[in-house]
Length: 536
Image 1 (cartoon, one colour):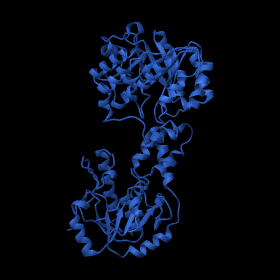
Image 2 (cartoon, one colour):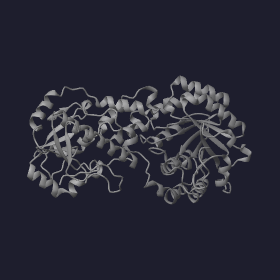
Image 3 (cartoon, one colour):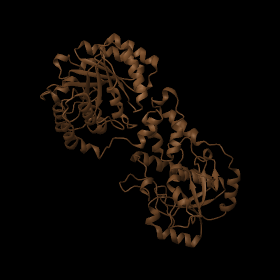
Image 4 (cartoon, one colour):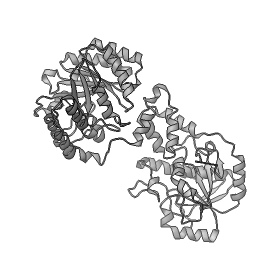
């Protein structure tokens, strides 16, 4: 049975959490605790010549910078490792190993770059380094592609080849499959490693599975202190070390990992947490790049069910190679449910076209200017339509629902027997049971050329114009301001946009209202960025 070794990559993979800014004192403390833990390999950070030297960061432009940060520290028995994302550090920035503080370099690369990356590995090997070939997103490899990788690796003969579960998709069955493929075909002197991510909470379990495989070659498992790392985090090294002590006769000093958690890691945990959560579960369960999930969740228009359904439409190589135009198209197509809404439009036209209409938005002004709104309702007795929210302070006649996520958030209120509000829903919102009172065709109300194609206020104005409404009064449509106090009466409705996007959205709504003037006038009852004039 080959030897099994442990590699810590906290200072490298953990850096995704804090942009590698651990602070020099923390870097030194973490490194020294790892040395005293007896861990076999310590990965001290990225080599990336696009980044300037910073003593407080574990991402460095060249090997000379590694020496500046770590050179005076005693490595004792540990093998010191750096990592390069292929293409981000030229060979000119890599000293010969005899002049460097590093003993080894790991090179990560996507499968379509395997030929060039392994040639680069060969040149690093010529400089005297132990070289690890790190297979990014190993689950994306077909068997044929993996065998081609093996052929290329056998020509270079790196120190080790590691399976990198970049998006945390692996379970024991596919881990064993890739292990057997590599173990059977790689040159016997090449070590075999595994780097886990915890999207499915499988990191620790998969490491145990990896270490249980019978082989004569060296095995290597990665971990980070407290699981600190990219996305859902990594396998916690303190757990792996404990297992290896108990089952493999190792003698890692667990207390040093625990001291590092308490003294060095917890300060980063609260402001930028990592670990298992629904976001990374959605990405992993759909075998896709996490940016697709970010894009859809940032819309704040979709239920989790809808997000899952859209992610399920991703195909082929696109799944793990993020393409914003591709996901935009899928999102738009998903929303374009085709219905015939003529009857519902006619019914609504008959009921409200000749009435005074008050639109209620969820801006903070509906609370701040409550007396003014109540006085207007008392004097005019308007038909009141609220947009994607309900407020028991006002006698709302219709709820306009264009946002599936808001519908889910309102489900309990809407199910109550005393709720008599009729619902006007757009066709992209699916009722949990039964049918909505009125359903309008989503694709006829959106602005396909806008940055946000489905602004709910604009969509409702488009619908009312379609019904022949000539005048509407709006309250609670305050517009956007970049403020810690937020824009909405309900905190859960806030959007995480920057100030520039808020400005663009305000400008867009102002322009749309101006375009509508030929057929419909919009008056504002409460203070709004959309209008300088407010009804007296």
